[in-house]
Length: 205
Image 1 (cartoon, rainbow, N blue to C red):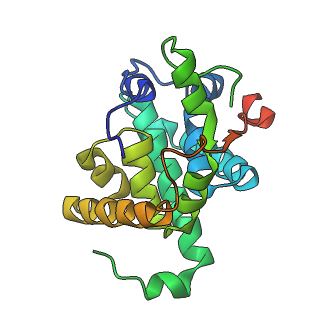
Image 2: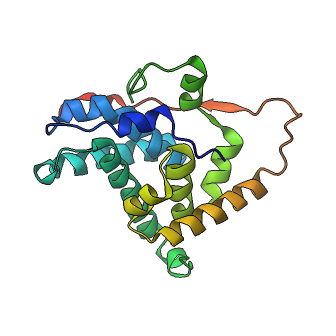
């Protein structure tokens, strides 16, 4: 899988010089957060809930936020909320697990090809992602789909770099196995439209 940073990462990396308002935070980062939430949860309903909770959590913590990289901070909050929810829902499975949006895209103007990539998900890939454990899925999504480095993913998930490397390596292997039935010579893969940012997030909190 390609680990090259996408245009979204350049937008994420742009530093802020002042603490944003709720409207600014949602307007500038809503598409990124909702896309991340959808990739993590695999369905619109849970993605809406996760996005909303992530923004509420972030907004409540703004008093202690030092202006810097808001996008990365929101990615960290969203991903860890997802993992916390997954642990609560599947505590027994985790106890036995060995640990090794808006109508526009954020950031700069992008090509039609990149617009399609951001707004459409390969159905087979999405199903394969959902079959991964939440911790493997989070590492794969952050690294291979959101374009963060191993070091950045390690910081976001608050786990050792070696653990991140192991999860990504094993997760990629599982994805390859799950997608082995696909042949490049066959017809193009089916795609599905990525749901838009819920309108409720646009309203001032």
